[in-house]
Length: 115
Image (cartoon, rainbow, N blue to C red; front, side, top):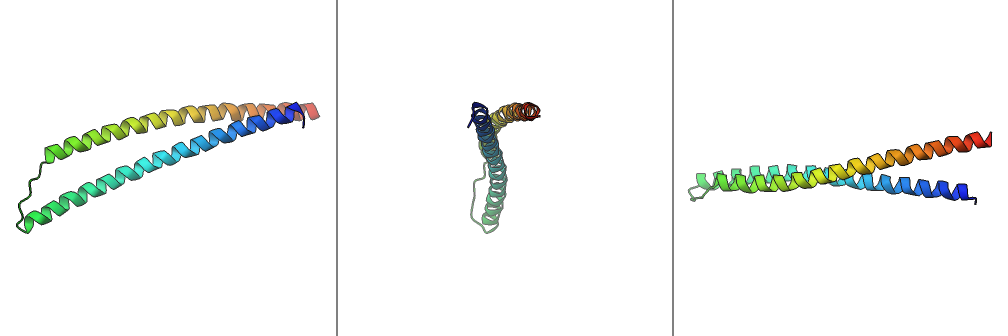
């Protein structure tokens, strides 16, 4: 194995590491989407259940303002995390493009040298 072969393998390994990171970050963003959908579903069920309890004559104290404060705080926290992950994903994907371009240049140079 020549040094060029070793360099090519190292470059390919770096590309695959960045592809894995990109995939993991995509997966994490999808999980946040599911979390937000689940939270919305829970909120709907919560208020529907409270209404049903009230209709059946059981007194229920509903503090919609408190609930909204909790939800707003929750959403703000999730949005901060999502923004951080999205920024990181942008950086990883940008580096992956650079590595892929480097790999393509390397392939072109190698093919020209073989001719």
